[in-house]
Amino acid sequence: MKTKLFQYITITFLLFSFSSCVDDLNTMPLNKNVLTSDKAYNTSEGYRAVLAKCYGSLILNGQSGPDKDGDLSGYDTGYSGYTRAIFYQQECTTDEIALHSGSSQGSRDLLFMTWNQSTSINMYSYYRLYMTISYCNEFLRESTDSKLNERKLYDELKNEIPYYRAEARFIRAYCYSMICDLYGSGPFTDETMPVGTIPHQKTRGEIYDFVVSETEDLKDKLKAPGENEYGRVDQVAAWFLLSRVYLNAEVWAKKNEYENAYQNAKKIIDSRKYPLAPDYRYIFLADNNTCKEIIWPMPQDSQNTINSTGTNFIIKALTDGSMASLIGIAGGGWGNARVKTQLVDKFDTADQLYDVNDPWGDHKRDKRAQFYTIGHTKETWTNGKAFLNDFKNGYATIKWRNKTKDRNDIVKDGTVYASIDYPMFRTADAYLMAAEAILRGAGGGRSEALSYVNEIRDRAYMSGAYGSGVSGRITDSELTLDFILDERARELHTESVRRTDLIRFDKYTKGYNWDWKGSDGSAGNYVGKDVDDKFKLFPIPQDEFTVNPNLTQNPNFK
Image 1 (cartoon, rainbow, N blue to C red):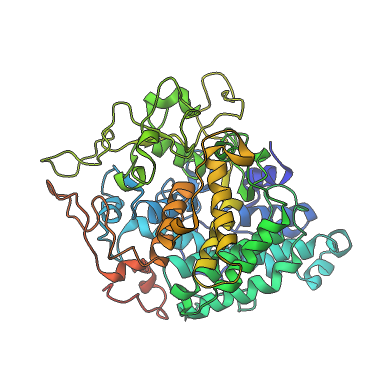
Image 2: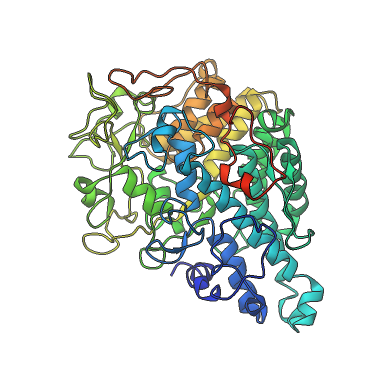
């Protein structure tokens, strides 16, 4: 067990076996066994457990493992976990990951960028996000002073409940930020609306405005930087969310908010509460709960979070059985997610190949180039053949390892499920957001932006303050927005931000192409091409329109 909150997240399943009293999104396909009743609020421990459910709904996928009694009725329990769902949308539609898998869920639609409103794989994050919003709304309704007094719990909870409420509001704001990012507009509900209301749709700009105003209001209501227990958010997480939302304001709301993006990112950096890890590789290991860089971690455990989502999905999708000893997973992974050539080529040629005598890449210049190449082609295609589910087409990546910093397995021969905590937010991203905001017009100056980028590269190359490696620093003349976009790929690949980045840089649908983009998968048709701008958004799931008459579909998805 890593923390008390983690324990609550993993046992909260037991508290949600009674009838629902949550109905603010009654058009959703929610498993009625997972929603709360008044019984959950009879004790202070019950309140804590419901808060844990608000957190856990973003990393778990069902009421028992592995992949059983799913939170979303009628949908694939494994696929529908949130972190897995956004990996598909944020990574497998970009220049980073080619997903070799069957087409029944619509994964080929993502690879070829040809999805529509009935593509199953695009529904999961939508329903998962709104389910979490529903949990947060219900918690906020049930945690008012009047409710606590009615249950004779006020005196017991009065010191902690303000923080609990701020955290629930933060989680809800995060969820709405992702609705804004992925789907643009969507139905809106909060704790003030009568239970049972069929929600009306807010525009993208309106959802953006809500996220900003809500996060600005609650940021000082969260615990001070570094003062909360592991797995729970504090004020730094709010600064991070604000920086990310402000950085994307031009796309989401047609507003220039780069100064606010910069100021919030700078607060994270200057606080020093979540310093960069001394080694990039430490962030993605089974003992990364000791890594101070992770601002908002989602705890994972090889015995208590046994499902096909979270980091267990990521490590298994990116590797296969031949890499079992390298990644600390008994039996190895599935190997259906492979790296596209465009990501590989963002690293120096000398760093691209795997060396059996250097399995951790200690002799590489850039330690972020963690590719496994033996038995694989660099290309994600076979000449003269249509797209195949050939797991040897494309390099694997061993960035994520179910091992400890001393490079040992958790247990001999590894565990079946991963214990790598999922990093929702981490400080390196704040450095790159600050640098980008400066280049887009925020204050700070180019020298400050350059120092932020070079700090990230010093750590990647284990040079400067991080070691005696060959320097990877760049000069002022090399510092451009295009360089920052590439640096974000090198630093953050497989962390589910790539689609958002490419759209912000106006390089998602047109002007920059990658393997299989816009293809029909036929022989020789692996070279990418421009696609319709409508694909900058995912459509609202078609099933929604049969139960909610208040919705309008995103443009050109009919």
